[in-house]
Each structure stands twice: as structure tokens, then as C-alpha cells.
Amino acid sequence: SGLFATLARPFWVVNERGGANVLPQKVRFSDHTCASPVAGFAEVPFLPSASTSSSFVTVSERVGGSQRLSAIGGLDEIMKGKGYITSGVHIRKIPLGVTVRKIVYLDHKASTSRRPLYVLLVSVDEEVDMSAHDDDGLTEQERYEARLDQNRKVLEDQINSDLRGHDDEFQDWVEEYTRTDYLQVNSDLGRCPNFTTTKHEIWLMEGTNWTVLQKISMEDEEHSTCVQLIKLTEDEAAHQRAEREAAGNFSVPSRDFVAVGTSTVSEAGEEAPATGRVLLYDIVVGKSEGADKPPRVSLSLQHEKASKVGPVSSLASLNCGESIHLIVGAGNHVSIQSWKKRTAGEIIAENEEGEQQPEGSDGHGLKQIGFHHAMLHVIAIKVVKTYILLCDAYEGLQFLHWRDKDKTLNLLSRDYCRTPTFAAGVISISGSLSFVVHDERENIRVLTYAPNDPAAEGGAKLCSRADMHIGLTAVDFSSHFCVPPEIVASANSDISFAALKGSRYDGGGMEEVFGLAFGSIDGGFACVIPLPPQIFMRLYALQNILANALDSPAASSTRGWRQYKKYHFPSISEDVQGKVLDVDVLLRFMNLERATQEEICAAGGTTVETVKDNLLLLSSYAGGVL
Image (cartoon, rainbow, N blue to C red; front, side, top):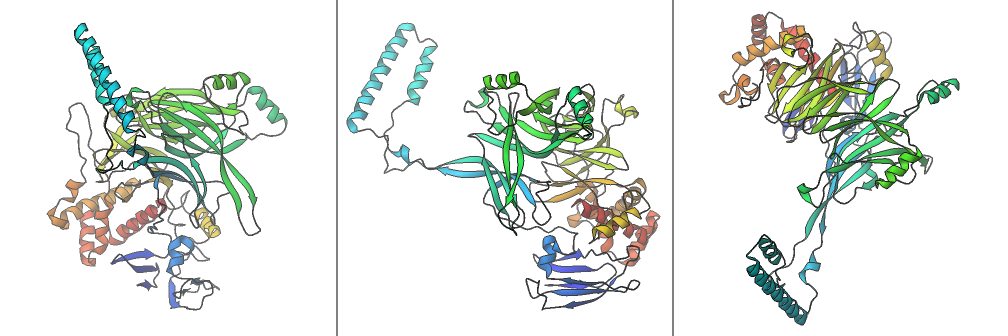
């Protein structure tokens, strides 16, 4: 149930979980320079493509010599992404019966908009039947003889211990006797309960009806930790490159892989060093089973590389122009791996070390060409061109640069605020790069690399520019290009491109914005979006006025809630900056009366129309991140 408003910016008001939810209907007309509002709306119950009887038609005002007529087969079609409503968040629950650890979109030619493919890392809980331990399989006579043998051995150990004066071996045989003490099984008192084990698998799923195309099981006690779709180029020698260019091929060949990092839990526990593996799966596209059926897609293991320095916790792709490498984070060890043809000696050496390559391998493999030792444990790696951002679990951020010419990895700067860190990401606007870090006290900080800043200590320290308490706990950040306002409402790619070219600024809208989105462990979702200085200062002044002029829920301080929560340790140095907009406070401006809006804008030296345009711009960029 709901209603539809036929305005210049049409929107829907639908009933969701007992409350009203506003969803703007994003449409673009044949002439992108003219905003033509929706003039009429009517239900049409006889659309043949409609899955339900609630179909409708919208009629727009005439633009030139044409008039737009849009037919939509129900809200279900719109909410599934097949119609014109593209803003807001629509959450659809897909029960899989497993725990999804990671999910990535398979950006490959086999994955299309009509048939999207995803790679999932899942864990499956299985119960092991322990009924075999209810009975030891011995007879009464055998149990009696086993008890006599054990008592005889205990008596001999006691006599030998008294003669030796209770040396260090006394405690050893006493503990051994305690562990091997015979217990008689009485099934009347109870039976051995089932034991739950967790097995990790790799799933290849189809996004249309969410069917599993392939399942790949990990080894026993092996956990899948990270997955990344990467593109690798073969490391060529000088004569190989000359031969390829002489043949007229000037492009370096590349291959797409699904890289998976794992960690192995040893039975020895903490006494054994942690290990892991890097698995590279080739994307195999087979033949179609029928004329109307898509081709079969599967993952084939092409190469595996053991990690003896620690569990593989993060993977990333490093694009150096002509060559593309793989970055592997294992423990505190970060290595740069290149894809190259292995020699016969390297294959023999790997076989002697127990690294057997899978069947179907073409002789290529990963070879380390660079490395860096972080402080403790790397949990995330973010790459921008040839610059690498490392997120350490306990020591903050490290900013590095890779030079492919001489294969060196140099540390440029780091974060001196050593706090336990959960996630890190990258944001950018107008070519200015910044880093966002999230700590255990539910704060976010925005850092920049500014060597000329006096606070940077010659460039060795990342400078803090802004911070805020978000009240959420996240474990991963994902960066995206924000869709410009000129094309955020587009329903046609050609018209979107025309609007993008006709924009005053390169990239559409204001400027090219690289935002950040993340989900919280309690089911929330949030965005971090950079803004130009003029719009930021206007909205920041408005936020301060609203925090003082409006009543807060339960008489709580909105400004105090968003303040950075500092660590109460003298060894941790923190520079509190603030300077982050709270959209929850800013959007309260839209619910005020016109007179109140004008009074607040007059106090901030702006107008109501300017503020609304800025909020609309911020909303469109947030929708672009989503």
C-alpha cells in the first residue's frame, strides 16, 4: 500500500514495516537539458508482462514534439532493479542455510546484467555422530584385565618414584595416569552428544534465482579468509617482450583469476606456527546446454602457493601499467607476487618442499619480487595506482609506494596513533587522496599524506584532518565512484553519456568523487563521502546551528555523541579535529516549517534553496555509493 506523487521530482510513499518510506522515481527524458515532470499516473491491470495486477503507466509532459509514456509492471519489478527507481536501499533476504563470510561480484564476460555471477566464501556447520564412543567394544573380562594391567603399572611407577626421590618425571606419569584413567561407560546415565564441526567452502552462485553452480570444499581445518577477483600479466624477460612486439602484439596478455586466501588451524594449537595458502582459480566458460540457456561457468584450480609466514589475511591487485602483480598479506609479511613461467628447477624444488601443483596447471606460478614487514598483523590492503595502504590490526596505517622499475617497496608514511584498528578505506575528490580508518572505539578518522605540512614531521607521519564517533562497528570498507547528479536518474546509457559530456565539470556534477561505504556487524549501513570546501563549510555551519536550535531526543547532546572517543592511555597521541557532517542532523532541516528554515538560513548567511540543493546533491552522491 502507498501513494505516488506526480511532481517535477516524482516519488513513491510505500508502507514498509509499519512506517512510510519515500522512494524517488528516477527518470530521464529524451532531452536531458529539460526537466519534464510527470503529468499523469494511472493503473493498468492488463499489462501482459506484469506479474501482479498492480501495473501502472506514467505520462510526462510534452518535450518538443515527443511525449514519454512509461509502463511498469508493478512495484515488485521496480524494487528488484528492473524498473526506474534506483535510489534508496532495497534489502531482500535470501536464505542460504550457511554463514556467508565474503562475497564478490564476478566482473567477467561470463557475468552479465541478466545473469550476474558471485563468488562466496561460506562456512557450513555439520554435526558429527559420536555414538561410536558410547561403547568401547570390550567385554567384561577384557575390561577387568585392562584394569589390572593399569593398576600394576601404577604400582611400579610409585615404587620407582620413591626410589628416585620424586624427580621431575613424577609429575609426568601422574598426569599420564590421570588422562588414561579407565572410565566405565554407562549408557543409562547418558550418551555422547554430537560434535559440531565447521567446514569452509567456495560457492559460485547465479544472481537471478540464487542457485549454486559449483561448490569447492577446503581441506580439513582450513578456513577461507579472503577472496578477490584479480587480473595478472605474465612477467616477461627482455627478449620475450622483443619477440612479442616484433610479431606486432604490443599489448601485454593478461588472465583473470579468482584469488582465495586461507588459513590452517593446526591440531598442535598455539605451539605450532600458523600457515595458509593462496589459491588461484581460473574462470572456465563452457558450452551452452541449449539455445536459450547460458553457457556453463566453473572455477578450475590453476595454482596454489603455500604461506609459511602466517595465515593469508588479505589480497589485492597492483596495476603498474604494463604489468599487474598480486599483493599478499600474511601475518605481518606483505609480499608482491608476479605471474611467470616456472623453470624445471623451480618445479622440482617445489615438489621437494611438498607443494604439489593441481592437475591442469600450465606451468605458470607466483614468484615473490618484493616484500615489506609490517608491525604486527595486516588485516586489509588498499591500492591506488602504485600506492599501497596497509591496515595493521594494532598499529594503525602504513602508506607505501611500489616502484616496478627496480622492484622496491618503500615506506612513505605511517599513522603514529597506535590504536587497535578494524578497517580502512580510501576516499578522494578532485584528485586529493585521503584515508579513512576505523578503530575499536567506534570512531573514524580521516588521514592524508602531506609531506609539506609541519605536522607531518617531514612526511613520516600521516596528518589527521577529521574524526567522528559513528557508534557502529565495521570490519571492511568498500570504495566506489559516486554517480554524478546529471546521470544518477538516468534510465538510458546513451542519454547518460550525453549528460556527462554536457556537464560543466569533467566527470559530471561537481567533481569526481570517490566515496566509501560499509556495513556494520549489527546490520546497519553507512557512507563516507568527501565534499568540496564551499559546500562543506555551508553545511557545517548549518549543522552547528541545528544542534543548538533543535531539541535532541531524550535531551541528549547530538554534538557530544559524535565527538571522537579518545583513548585514556598516555602512550597514545591523538589530535581531535571533528569536521565531519552528520547527515542525520542535517536532514532534520527538511522537516522544519518554511519560516523556521528561513530563520536558520539567515543565521548561517545562506538561503533555503541553496541548502536544499546541497542536501539533494549529497543525497544523490550517497545514492551513487549505494
